[in-house]
Length: 254
Ligand code: G
Ligand code: G
Ligand code: MN
Ligand code: NA
Image (cartoon, rainbow, N blue to C red):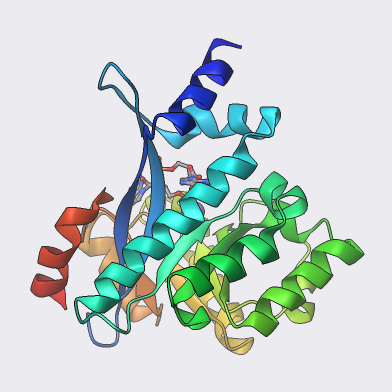
């Protein structure tokens, strides 16, 4: 209950902020996109991770307001980067299942794009498999509307959720994000390596972009390059950082 009250206050007092983590395209080594990740800097100056407060925000329904703030803040920041000349930059935003179902998501997204004058294809939505397997009329119709608007859709934590792959065919998803647990275990067990290769092949057969998350070592990078993975994200290139650090990273890796 305490953290729930605190979350309300935090929204009112602007205690949330976004950190940003670059995604690197392996074909040319350049930054293809940036994932926005929420942080909570509370009144004591303590930085809290979303895994500590997102589940509580989901339970209380506050995730909807929080998610609206995230979308608008990410769009505001992206528009600023576009104005600084990074006109091709894409920002990826995580959506929670609750927000997707009850959050008036289409309206939130179209007004954010409109208010900040952004082309829809520079916004990517990261959905979890738990959203996609719900497979109800309303989820499918929302996904189609979002595609029609022109935003990109990525499946986050791919491989950890449910085994039904039928939605990949039916819903026009653009990208698979291979869950970091497989990348972590790449060189510990043969199965993870086989699974990663299989996901990349599956993605390519379906003409999807495949990105590996949680890339921390040169050894993992070499494996992913060899397996024709399209993009990588992880501490090897950069941790999630405050927005002010992004221009220097863009200047360094392009
Ligand atoms: O940085 P990391 O500790 O940043 O994030 C932990 C988890 O929180 C991840 O599963 C990530 O997808 C989720 N997360 C981060 N930011 C957001 C957000 O803005 N909205 C939602 N729904 N989840 C987020
Ligand atoms: O669930 P989602 O993929 O949105 O969350 C991304 C999470 O992964 C965030 O918590 C982010 O801080 C974390 N992360 C990003 N890069 C790495 C990495 O190289 N290693 C590990 N262990 N975590 C990472
Ligand atoms: Mn994500
Ligand atoms: Na993920």
